[in-house]
Image 1 (tube, rainbow, N blue to C red):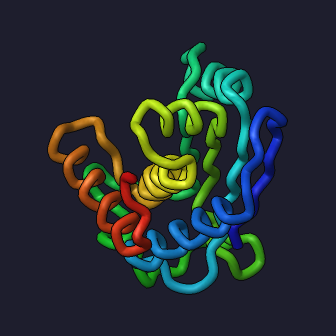
Image 2: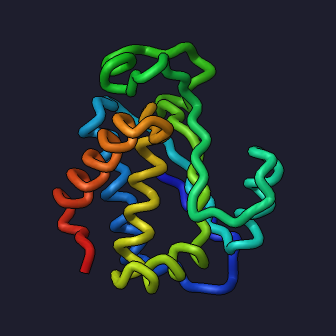
Length: 167
């Protein structure tokens, strides 16, 4: 289950963009070895909203585009498909039968600004941010150059399969 909560009033998050984001999340989960039902919650906010969450959770009093809050822990350099694929987790990781992967917070305002800056659609930018965050929920990181390259490759592969390209 993918739950959207839109807590901003500056821009409209269209049904088309939501549907594309759901497809992107589902494909990322499948490609990364998640089997069975899962849950991801997406909170859509404006720049001020994400600044507050970033400040409260990461002690960074600044606007960012997306934040990820994984429910599952990973070993160093490990991702879901390497460490957890096919595994049954303890009960606290489930909401009913759905494996809780985590929460994604997206600033739709920042996504819109970046879409203009990068010269592509809001749909592409929003889906990119959701895939990026979903990969964080599945253990990917980009602190080291090697990890960053691996993550970028997976992002582009998933978006490419959905034919969501830079326009």
